[in-house]
Length: 373
Picture 1: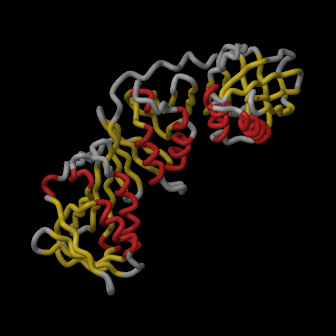
Picture 2: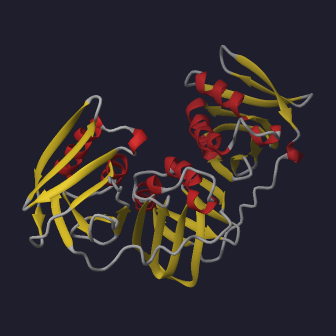
Picture 3: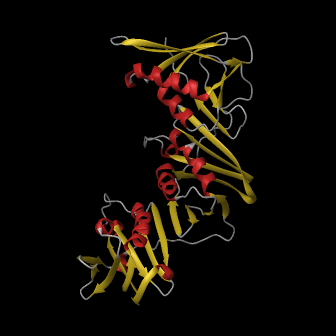
């Protein structure tokens, strides 16, 4: 393998594939990046067996191709070397003795290569009818649900996001048993079969970092044990979580005893200030108490002090509520709401609080209250 390529072109694609390796892996080959130079261009590949990333540099972006071939090289070292080289032409050449020679006008490095035959088959196959979805829409789905995922390993299914597709409706749900976020969107085309899968949230968070803010589409190829995302010049595979996701469809009721509408920024700022006098030992508890159209949000740490915040809300009836909840969970929920106003729905002080945009049902969130007596 021998080629000449601009530093910034190679670096852009190394930034993609570096996310597919793990330095904690016990198999050294899984800490590597595979370079495959063909007549079409240069493919870069990485995997840690949970995710796999493949990216392609077209021959039009390569200054010179002399010899085709493939090499496998330590991911972290090649990444750091290329990152710190100046923006100029880089020569990459495999030399005798399974070594990669990296040279520029003033620098030269030699890296040992690994056996290319030991690099895993990435299984990057494609289905005949993938789901086509806007990249920005998919980013929004993950950003508005991922925060509610469990970080504990005691229930592995809760460490992922549940994707359900029925016809042209896709519902994405995340929960850690104390809070829940569910996002519903309409797909451009209906899917023939019902889909019910769990994708690890940590893998989706890595995928989101690769997506653009443009209106470009992505392809989603779903298989029995994996999902493959294809967009721009990137292909990413993620394994699925085995297991049955809990049925959350009945957790959000259709009727409520009390509804409040409030300006999102006012409510967020009040919760944010009240959270200053909370601590993790009591679950970051704050209290909300309504009296007519006035709501008092309060918290205290006995040995330090207390805080009260007053805001004005619009209610749908004369009932009042007194309820406690985690300020951390509430702030996490409010950060992903994309609206001027927000709606709080209550069915008593011991039933879950529902949070949503008053003008849309596509995103619904649930937070369990905290007993304070």
